[in-house]
Image (cartoon, rainbow, N blue to C red):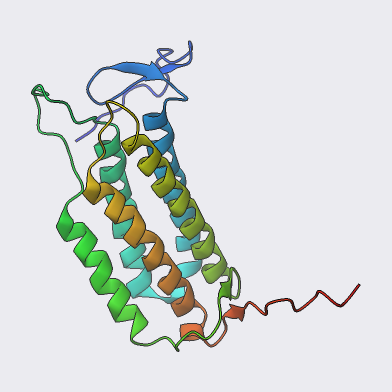
Length: 195
């Protein structure tokens, strides 16, 4: 368990921060950016959960995902190295990805089929979930960018988790929009001739 006695340490005042391995990197390092995007996704989910009080199942799922996003942040903050780390790093597991898939399938059974792209909107909960979805996509892009950098490794499971999470949040937004009945659909070119 993590114990925080002091919130400020002043160790980052020079623009650097510590990874879980103890290495110091600049705060704009690609690894820090990747887990920072995960943290932002988590904050968006916290806001979404304020709207989810009427859906106990979804609220519980989002709460579990918030905890898993801390696991994912720890995974990204602990670079894979060839030499032993001296501790067992916390890594996202394939089982966590599989649970997201099962929940996507469960939610998708109830929603109406799509015949157009969906605009982010509808209910307050759906709108908040769409915001979380787009931020999770950004976290995925940042993680992929990191994984392609020389000398950097990112678990393929971590990237798969982010990919599946954005799908989960999309289907959850449709659930929040009366199982798709209240989705706001894209109408291609709808306003082109309105001057």
